[in-house]
Image 1 (spheres, rainbow, N blue to C red):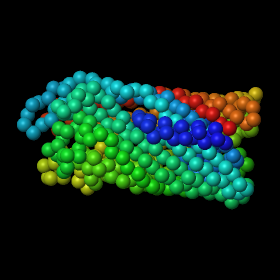
Image 2: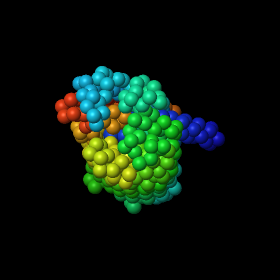
Image 3: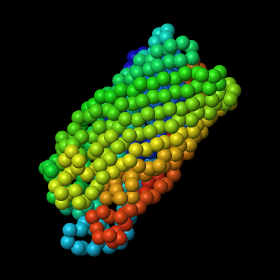
Image 4: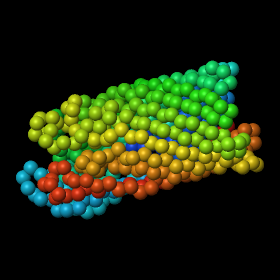
Length: 420
């Protein structure tokens, strides 16, 4: 037990200092826990280990006691391309033509889950990262002469405290309290100072931190001998403001985490083969700093960065479909594979600010396995490939048809896990 506590403390420390660079389902991870990631992310009706409470707090009611650890190596590739020369006309803001790739392409992301059952009651704790946004362009994208690079870094850490209860042998409900910590920094955007309500808290202010609270509620039930259904809803997580960036984000630095829901089914063909399917919707439209459009005319009408209706990234709500399969081969081997698709959330009119956050991935292909060891221990593995996706649109601060901005991203992730 002492060793487990030391390991948990170490993972918590790593999570707090790790820069999360994910941009998969917008800026949510495609899945949580090594086993679920190997299946493309579904699991609201198919709990596999203590990390399953992140998707559905009810599912862990049937799992018994377990400890789960994971360490992922995440590698995103991000770039933007400017096509067309600046017009140099008065009142325009043309960008330098060319293709620039973001640096900082490798990130380690640990996770931890613990599940303890007492009769019909189960208590669960998870510690994990929720993706985030990270770009590091070694150029003055927006001509900020005070720094030599441009980009943002958003890191998010979550602690989930879950109580689940079996209603009977087929149905369960669960509730999670979510404690969230996030930090953010932006660099290279001081050139927008004339469009900010508070240009002293706009750019290059180091890291700003915030804390917040939210909740997740879920249900799972076996409605037929081979068919299980599940559903979960996560509230908006209300975060404190990024005070050092009150002149960048809408509502004076507010950056809450959006509400989302997931529903799905799992079908056991036989004791060895199972399929599971989830639908997830993320309500980015409920967060003004993320969803408010970038409209240059607003600046002329005295609606500035940092105002309640100030410009954001223009993200739309996102619906994601996840399909996974699991095959228990025997001799302790379990194989998994999956696929997920969700239309990326950035409209073509919103290219200017999304150079900083090109979360455009739509398709993920995954696979992985588990190998059972002695004393109910197991080693787990998952691999994810996010297919390259490019979007393009006009520079909204240039003359019509003068410049096109292209955003492109691809990614890979490899995770190893251990269960005991």
